[in-house]
Length: 312
Ligand SMILES: C[S@@+](CC[C@H](N)C(=O)[O-])C[C@H]1O[C@@H](n2cnc3c(N)ncnc32)[C@H](O)[C@@H]1O
Image (spheres, rainbow, N blue to C red):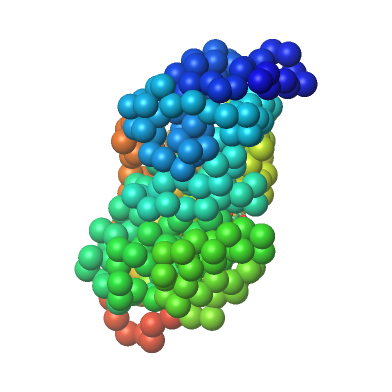
């Protein structure tokens, strides 16, 4: 039987169609859309069959019938329109864990795993810390921390209630829903307790960068990406809020854009003079994380004095 499709450039494919033929066809279709057409074709076939990707490679002769083939063709059409692959499959792997995603959330990126590593490094010496993940999105950071640091108290905030629906779903899936308090609101404002560790992957794309981003990235929520004219608006407001909220000896870890290291460091030094400051690179050697650690010299209650943080 012939599977027809409105866009002639997509087909037709004939059912039954082998996995091999379906893969080759999709690779040709996706050439201009992605740098990894073969991998994406395999991932979609694996998703369709509910099997691991290696199955697709190991069983090229397995045949797709009409219905699965129609679904597959529709997925390729969505991908050709620029929709990110994880929005089509509905899930993505981050830090070795599986997370549900939808167009309400940013798709977790591999470079953000470095932020989780940096947080776990700090938590190794502060195992019962109070942590807040600001801009939790899918919840990937907060949930990875909950899974890897069993004694920390975790709060997670986001301005988007729809994003936190996905984050709660992911927390439930990973069995950590009782360990993370999700709060809708602006940055640190909804937080009822002063945190020891603030970890955040905030929006940091500049207005100038936005039009040049791939179509698939521009299908993700603008509120998750756009950080104002120079991309620094949300980072700046977060650091300003942190001044009066971060506990003595606390730490701030913020993901930044690769060109923002110097500006963010200058900003952080103005707001937290005396703090230990570093801009950490990602695996590609690009500036990626601001790390700011307060040095507490004693004398005040833990909590909220701007002068204490500034003089630390
Ligand atoms: C870059 S995404 C990060 C999502 C997730 N943490 C990750 O790393 O994949 C930024 C997130 O910050 C949220 N956000 C944007 N402005 C915010 C604000 N003023 N207060 C709290 N969250 C905000 C967005 O809704 C989005 O979920």
